[in-house]
Length: 138
Image (cartoon, rainbow, N blue to C red):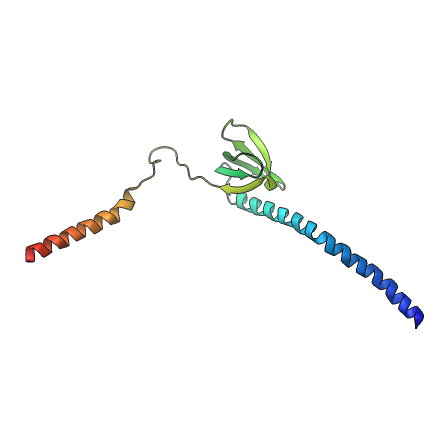
């Protein structure tokens, strides 16, 4: 009986130590996983855009970058910066957000605000016609 107790305690000691080390190392591992998760999100978001798309990248530790998307790889992507037309290799983990600035070039590039005024003009016209009809009948 005494030898059985010694064997079970000898087995329990490594188990308790391994659980203690896992409890200490788990937060560090989860922080590394969140970085990988963020990089995967950026990679998936960039995969939705075609090569040559004009994008606005919000960087973690650098100023924002505007330019055209190049080829994608496992750890990063090529990006042609609009300021100097120089290709740069950027890692997914260096990017905070990806935005597509819907910039149009050429005829009709100015935003059209006419469609916002149309419902107001129709409402005012209908009210004026109703008021004129009311005054005519009165």
